[in-house]
Image (tube, rainbow, N blue to C red; front, side, top):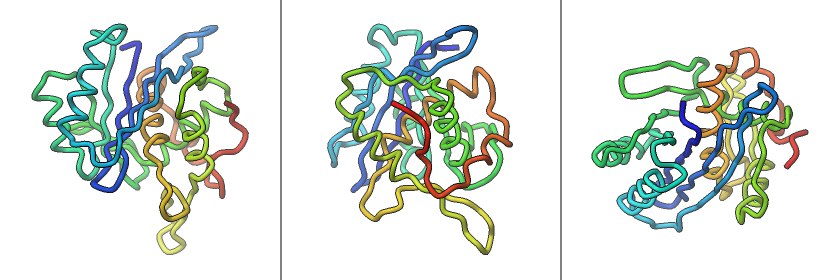
Length: 209
């Protein structure tokens, strides 16, 4: 199991693309996620440029041979995944769904958004998510967490998660969630019961930075 995980949330034309680097650290027999780096690409950054930047990161120390890239394959992600595979980057592709169950398929994982959200919530509330001091986008991450809401369709009873105000972004929080989910998934899969605990009005509650 790799020591580092890079979560990559790919934005479409008018959306930001973000990466989050999480280090897996064992403390007292318990796995913790240390958020070491957050980066948001300027709007309009081409996918080849993103692939080049992230590929360079995976080959540099301390990540070389000790990192896995977890890419959001939803929407525009599939051709970008192909680009990474073309240059030999080790990755896991995740398609974010509105379903109930994590499934492993030939082209990657299908992960309900509720699972990504609940992993962050559990890590924050158990104080197992540590954020490195001095990260320039920490306040942006906090803002995205505060804006993250649960929406329940009263006709289908299905829940969805996203920024509740038009114009808000969730790229950084999704990038962090992808990396943290992978660390938790590899160390100890999150029970479905845990994923259902957070059908509340606000995602960010008692977690502390």
